[in-house]
Amino acid sequence: QKEVEQNSGPLSVPEGAIASLNCTYSDRGSQSFFWYRQYSGKSPELIMSIYSNGDKEDGRFTAQLNKASQYVSLLIRDSQPSDSATYLCAVPLMDTGRRALTFGSGTRLQVQP
Amino acid sequence: GAVVSQHPSWVICKSGTSVKIECRSLDFQATTMFWYRQFPKQSLMLMATSNEGSKATYEQGVEKDKFLINHASLTLSTLTVTSAHPEDSSFYICSAREGIGNTGELFFGEGSRLTVL
Image (cartoon, rainbow over all chains, first blue to last red; front, side):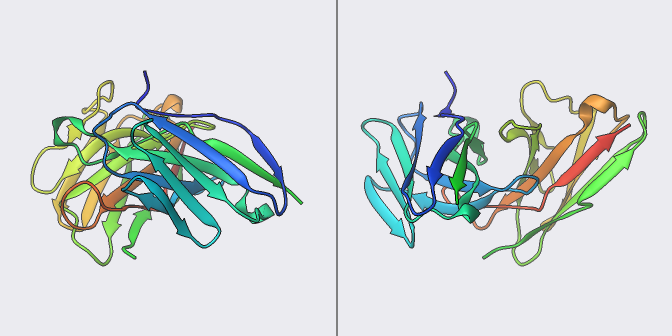
């Protein structure tokens, strides 16, 4: 089982709609969770981080964490064409003290004008 | 936020040659940096963890003699792809975390796209 799983998409939503991106993780001990956005040909940039159960909002973005279900999601309200990108869910590698992040395969989001 | 700079952003080389990629933390000290590789339409795969002043830790399946990592200072790590072949063509991305522990934000360099002819 992969450590982080995401639906590869593409997820297509009309402009102005809410985009919902989902991620599940396998390590029940994970304490921190990250959403990165990656435009084609570019490196990832951090969108949201979340550490506690519940919702965390930042502008049009809301991250939701449910540790019991090992599930983290990202909601993008009022989606814009500029939001079209691949969204990567990431959690820290827990074994052997490694401090890197492991990434899901990413969900490609397409926002239709 | 912290800045990680990577150079070169793209490089084309002939098969059999070696290519060096630099990763610098510009406004913070990074005792540990991470090197990822990304093939087209795939996610980031961790290649190795670069440790300042000591040997790098390589992930399973990554050849340490082919991908040489040097972390000589607190702000610079280098990845050298030795005897490059077309299958090494990929997007190489370095990253670093400010501070200690493993819960903080990971900052990424701009990435280096390697094309081996």
